[in-house]
Image 1 (cartoon, rainbow, N blue to C red):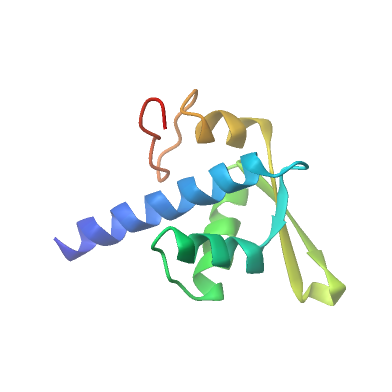
Image 2 (cartoon, rainbow, N blue to C red):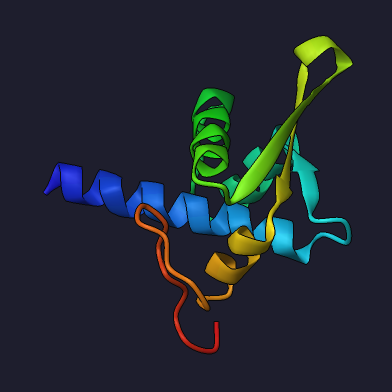
Length: 102
């Protein structure tokens, strides 16, 4: 049961990240802002977890990652495929599919 809950939380965090990036005008946000947004959605996690999710999304081609300020700031940018997944048009294992009309 605990692993099922952990899986659900992880998949939902990743969807929240994608949907948050989709709402931004240039589809890009740093991990500090993403951490704040995740907290407001009930995912109070550390920066290491956010960084790990962003790296995982990058490995899947859903976001790109840039390191700024000598590597102190990580910026995630949504890809076209990531936008499709955030809208439920495409599916990606490890990311929760959004509910219809959500």
